[in-house]
View 1: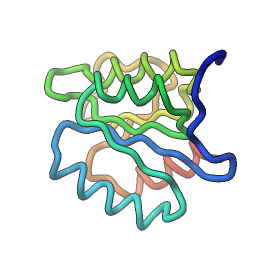
View 2: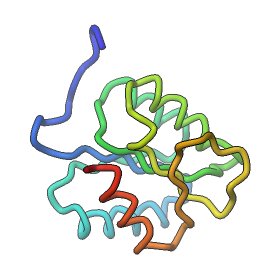
View 3: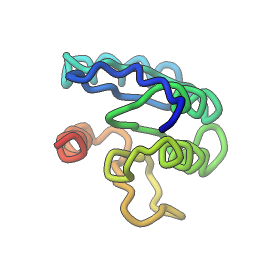
View 4: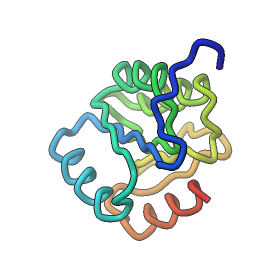
Length: 125
């Protein structure tokens, strides 16, 4: 995009993790560091913070909680990710619900780490 700052190194994955539960985000960061040790990880605790990061950084992958703190806040993150040029195939939604998810969005249940790892591998192919 014209005028867009690309802070992602060309040979390194850059992953944005979004969740309003700070404790869960900390655990998720530690797990992601083990699963993708060479990835540059950033976090956001709400949709507005995620949108700000998406406006200034090019990400390889965005993984977002669906409800934070209100239902469907993850859809706001998805919209911002799409507006930033991120393909839907590189967006993963964490949730226990399948209500109101657009076609093509990967849904992984929170806590299902094997499914999440598989979804990450598929998204970053």
